[in-house]
Image (cartoon, rainbow, N blue to C red; front, top):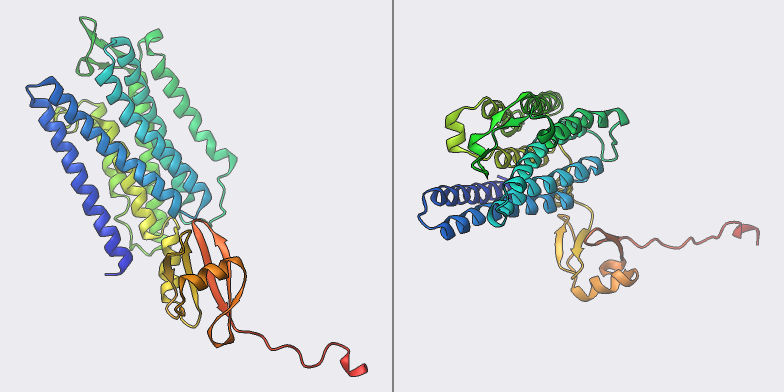
Length: 350
């Protein structure tokens, strides 16, 4: 197993452990006799989920090299953090049934929009680093935004939800779903399934089927959205927050795509550089600590690196050490010194 694969496996194990811990906290909170303990455990679980998605979004921003995909992924990650954290904070500190109701509307609205991000990101799969989505692709947000508006204005028409309150207390379990809710969830499912199919096709044609398992998380989330919308009681008892599952599945799916190389990242360049021979190249951070080096990179001290960052310096063997700024640090490489021309142009005529 390569170093990159080992690191990915460790990240998966750590993420799974955090999710299990968060689910455990949420389960204990349901049966806690103390209201304070229940709120604390719920806060811990939400903190874990939001923290994971925040860390993932920051990581994607550093690793993904395809500009369009990176921007969409980071924006979607921020939206995921919002729809997980905001409802929990509202439920903990706001007692107004009206505020809680509109927070629920907002959560469902974002659950309609995030799968649309998945669809657009799937269009970027396998494309060049400078690929830009055509303007027509952004039209997919039109139905998502219209359905979100219909959900947010439910109090005016009552066609998305009904019976949201019992004795002036907002209770999610008492909600009855209407036409706009099912349409919104249908749109979300369609986007997820379309993203799944597009990615499957591109993985199959560009990777010879090697990574056909990658879309599994998004397939699970699509099935979950449909089953949750039709009111499967087992799912609502086992995983009562579809927004959390949708966001985690979104992150798991696209993280797998990044790791598999379907969405290009600088990890591809790391392996390429480490395997490169016959060249002396290294990357250092802003503190001049080595991050990665080619197989034949010549050893050099921090003092030499610092001097090369200021201006080219002479290295061992008469070679010249050059540097150039890159994101988060510097690239350094050596070039053989070129012997000066013995006869200047036109010198034979002088």
